[in-house]
Length: 163
Image (cartoon, rainbow, N blue to C red; front, side, top):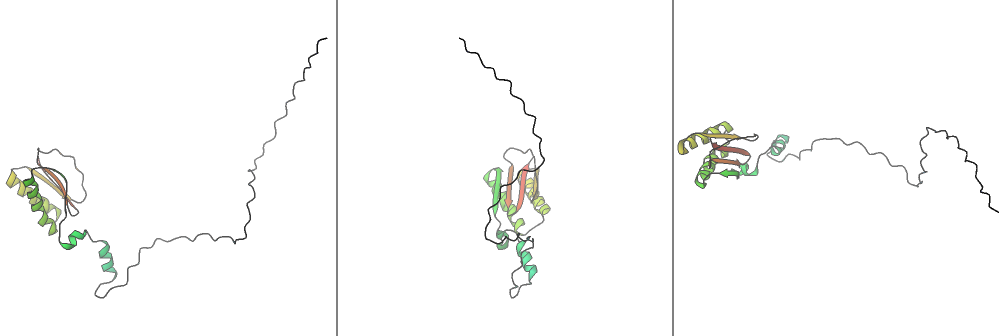
């Protein structure tokens, strides 16, 4: 005899469960025997206090002046030369640095340094030289071949070139 196949009745579908809007429960935190920590106190941004005035000083004004001082080289009267880019013969480069150094050392205004360098180079190497002097400038230039120098004397940038 053949076995009769048993067919199971179709499974009844369960109605969807209602959703709740409750946040998930957090697991309990372990307890400790330490007292609760105090929240950190807000910090304040105060300038540093000046050191006590030394004998012969003017107090806080000397302290502030010390913060605003320029290069150490300028305090000693030395001029630190830093050539960033140079496309000129060595004698011309030496002439540029030797002409500019005393002007920077004497703390001449930037326009006076630029004017003196331009006049010197126009007279010795034929016109037309352009000189830009300052502490913050950008540039995009075209210059004559082998007639360009960009240097710093202390914190003063000098760009000298022939057009």
